[in-house]
Image (cartoon, rainbow, N blue to C red; front, side, top):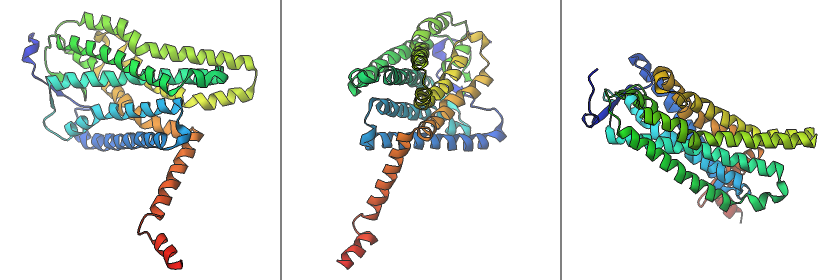
Length: 327
């Protein structure tokens, strides 16, 4: 293929999740259903966390932030994919592609940092409960969140700028959104600088939260082992099991996708894995945290009772009219 200058590429063609036309309606229906469940589930979790005073704690502040992240992550990629699935025109402009890359990498990286902050919250709650309120406060969580946003934004900006400087030999992206792996695959020359960045600075920013999480749970395991208490073990598992499952879902797919050289990319397999962490994981997160968390289930029951009562006693309702008639 002849080498083309990057300035000649004004748009990319996103090939989508499958190249089989007969599969497009099926893909559209399944992905749309999962997207709606993901958005509504996370929005419900945010509503519950913000409306129930019993959940005004650092842990649920971070959980609320995680739900916001999941909504953003799916919205960055899925609506465009749904439009392209049933459309003949599957193009995206070069600038919009770079913007999508930047926001996707920023939001995706931020999810790992939030999970690391939640792991630290669990570590302090289990290993140093008497000082928990002094160590972990909403202000402390806010500082961590803002600092993480700055770090991941600068990291994603660096990646995006380096991608714009590549020379592309073609514009057909074997993916349903502008991700860094298929874009590097389109480079006319091996993107050595980009790969070095992924395995150095990328590991530090994206994968270091995973190692921090492992360290936190190792310390928790040591602390519980010293207690020699089955009750303490059960309490720790009930507290941490939801978080551990979410971490495994996220990092299992992320490490498989990104921590390898571009020569070993299997783009057909990668775009199938990508649907897992862009749609399936955000859809499962609120289910995992609500079904396995008694406090969230209690808050959901209180919210539903509040909504039922407000609907029953709203102005002009039949219940009020009957009460006035009796009076």
